[in-house]
Image (cartoon, rainbow, N blue to C red):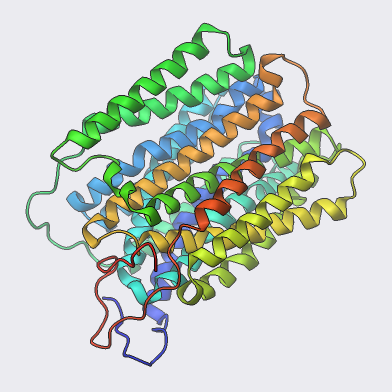
Length: 486
């Protein structure tokens, strides 16, 4: 139950049971997000191992992210139907099995297929983690708790390439996936001991929006496929034109379905009538695209432009992770007092400034300058993630929190997959087949710069300082939204 707070007593404390619960959930969430990018630093290695092109190997990452987006809405429905603890354990188990299968892959196609299995498990983990900790924290502690839970969302993807570089320097590529197994087992054991038992089901849960799944998820997949193929063959090829046409058609069909259905749609478009929610979703969409595009670009940049080894390129990403690690607790401690409207634009400026440095860099640019730029971008990501997620719970009514959480996660993952597809397209010079040089990488780094500009604008529309809770006790998480103009 959320801890009550009396008037004038100050923020409700984060007690030991809540911190224990958060720690167990973060272990599983961190593992999922680590694996989303742990292979980024090994893209070149995997391409050489399987004799595959960049356009093909890119799907080792993109396929994982799309599978996550596919699993998220189904997981939200399944939690209501079967219980959070059961679904959390199922998600961890599927992720573990997928990790073991990836280590057994014999070619690029099999690895992509097994990464999709991993993504299905990871997609079940993320929304359950958010729903459980948000319910336990309550509105008075949601900002600080999101600062802790945002560890896997922001730090995990940054640390992944560093760990990948260390593994590839000493072991075979299979260890990028085998390393997940002991952590998955530990997460399962701790979850069995710590998570509360699922309550007995009450009533009949709403049916899964199967038509929404059949329209929306393939639509995003078709668009990302088209962008990936454009990087190899150019925009004039038939498969690119067909992919774009199919994706846009499915988007329109889903919008019609979501606005006309009498049930619960996969992604409730009516939530976007809230200015604050629309700004939150836009921010998380672009944060996913900017973060994952940077994590895709930087290892390749250090290897192909600056001539570093796999291990060196992984270690050179450490400033990005350090900046995020410092920025997250700062944002978490300030979010419940200052509000997202102040923190997110400041974070966006830092992200944009950091990426901007790389647009003018080449093999002769000082590493000190690049290190400072990465640290600034990482600190900015820490300032954006936690306040934005906290604002979601302050801009929607209580009965819409589950759907809103799913929408944010879906679009964050879709933004990540689209971001990777776009920068891969730029690196491949629109299908010219030339090897990317410093100028091509500079063009690609403009993508996260542009995303940071939009995040800055969207951040100005986020909720301001949260209102204090009433003296009689606080309501359940998400039941009392703060108006968009607060």
